Length: 462
Image 1 (cartoon, one colour):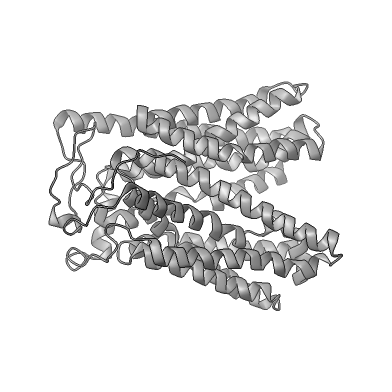
Image 2 (cartoon, helix red, strand yellow):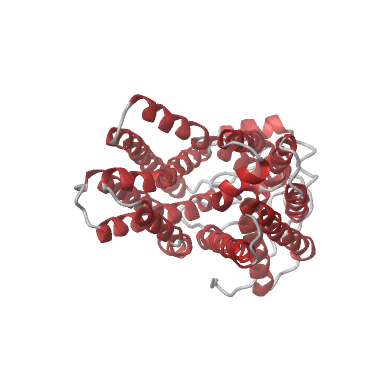
């Protein structure tokens, strides 16, 4: 991944004017950022970003091992699909409960320490998992993973990326995070499947005997990335801020953030963009239902979509920094909606190449949307001092589709049959995408108004 080869500035700008007005050179004490830190070379900055990519791409594959080894997990732990679903439902609930405190914590503890703890704790729990304990222990393992990959990880990761990227680089850094962490996940999954196949096919071991070795592959990787985080992740305001924290409390910061209209607009944009991505989970079954494709042909198309992640994330990130992140977001969401509608209205006799093109287009556009939507947090009337808390608040709103979309899909499947289920499900998501486009328009409108009035976009929360 290539970036603009310039050195890292010694401080974040505290006041940024909408419409591209340069920020003030001196930081206001109210922002909670102290005096300037020493400059870092571009190489140091990119190396730290590479570590963040490794952390983002390494922590979740261990937790979501079911993606490639669900049947083996069920056999090894002697549990049912329903029981495994219960563990992951508990994990999702933990994520929801920790989004807000995760942001609060990220504003008070160094991202370096939080990410180091997350990787090490996830690895330690993985050791327990690899020992194939009684299924009663799985509740505690998944509960712990909810803390290590939610409470101490999520907001710290996003804040770390935001801190490393300059204002004009936010798109490419967040796009790179989305695209390249997918590549890390793909490499790890390839290694895990190869290891599994070697022991099962070459050595003749049972799948249940091989699973611990696969888990340990991810565990060792988690520990290695944790060490890298501790040794090399030195971000520019890598110490807890005490000046403003002593004058403000959580409730005051929340009241301030909730009064910022831009925060609500960003939350709506991310929510709608995330829903468009959620639609892709149903593509395999839909292609088989409407277009009578074989399971293997549908799997080929949906797996090909996964490789669009680096292309979509990186491409949209660089393009967003060039022509405007909101502009590119509007394009990617519009094309995602049109692609979704095309799948619904194409004739059932449509050829495989046409379907492949449409699915890959949706894949690129949804990954591009995911890569860009956090980048618009930059200079949106949100002080750096409460960036972590803002990430937590937005996440709490924006990722609620994890809860209600599966329930909506299940409800439709219970009350309707055949293509009607997908027509209503995809139709709802497409309509939500239009709501996201309206939110982007409002966000751009506020940008122009503030720029014309020369109003500072970042104010201090007193």
